[in-house]
Amino acid sequence: MKIHEYQAKELLGAYGVPVPTGTVAETPEAAEAAARAYETCVVKAQIHSGGRGKAGGVKLAHSPAEAREIAAGLLGATLVTKQTGPAGKQVHKLLITEAVAVKKEYYLSITGDSERAGLVIVASAAGGTEIEETAKTHPEQIVQVPVSVLMGFRRYEGLETAHRIGIPAALEQDFIRLLADMTRLYLEKDCSLVEINPLVETEDGRLLALDAKVNFDDNALLRHPELAALRDIAEEDPKEYRASQYDLNYISLDGNIGCLVNGAGLAMATMDIIQKFGGQPANFLDVGGSATAEKVTAAFEILLSDPNVKAILVNIFGGIMKCDIIAEGIVAAAAKTGITVPLVVRLEGTNVDRGREILRQSGLNIIPAADMADGARKAVEGARGGAAQ
Ligand code: GDP
Ligand code: MN
Image (cartoon, rainbow, N blue to C red; front, side):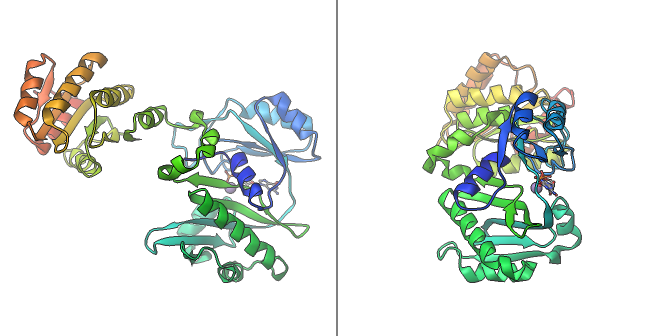
């Protein structure tokens, strides 16, 4: 789960990390009122994406009137950043924050490291909006310091990081404390990323988190009911949100063949074989091992709500779940949702004969597939508008 910058800063602040003051505004008037607290302020679009600065979503205002003007331009506008994709994200909230005189920008984050089975501090003296470019062109400028997940953060790991990115000696202790606080937040709230970019050294010699990103591990959210309040559904793909309500593992993709599969491995293989036959999957969807008719119906509705979907490939292996139950679910869902695109179904496994019989007798225009390759080929043809039967 992702949250907004202002929420990430509140959390970091609560853990002891120094953050600039700020106020959230949802109207130009509120932005103007908030800006009265400052001589100069920064108006920042709150969307679940980085790269806002380069997209015009972070602007300096020298007066409350200017803040109001900038806010009027940003609210309701769509920002297209490197991370949003071409559709961009609409701005509903702004953060009005004190403008800080910056001496130096660093990059600092902590994240999971599956290779080392632990955590890793990622840091750089070349912080700021060019960090992704730096990672590509000068990877040696990005420093990694592993942290044991069992021992937790150690001061010497902080000192090593400080030395390697050139934190001034006078700020070393503050830097180590800041890293300790970040790590505590990471572990206590089951994060997948805590990132400060830029972490700045101010002209008056302090460390300050000028931007912040905190992502949480979705699988651990049930341990943190307090985090549910931070969720902003307006920022999420509506299809992915609906899928999460039905406990479906769904990820939106750019292609035009909707996939409905049970099991993550089979779902991956299905996406591969669609591409092998020249098609592009519109989604990853694993309905899980215990899909009910209700879940299958929800899955169909989600697939059909995507205007890009020109054909659907159902690829089910009935193991724990029986093929006849799945077939009944498909028929019920197809009848309820009124599928208008070619529907290719490949069923295999327990009670497969009864399952195929149910599909045949349903009177629905279902295109049966003999195996995965046959199913993928027919789905690709169907999406192209060809006669797949
Ligand atoms: P991002 O582009 O989405 O990562 O948004 P940031 O919050 O990182 O803002 C982009 C850039 O704006 C930062 O990297 C800073 O260089 C600059 N910036 C943001 N706030 C301030 C500020 O208070 N003072 C100064 N001097 N620069 C700022
Ligand atoms: Mn940033």
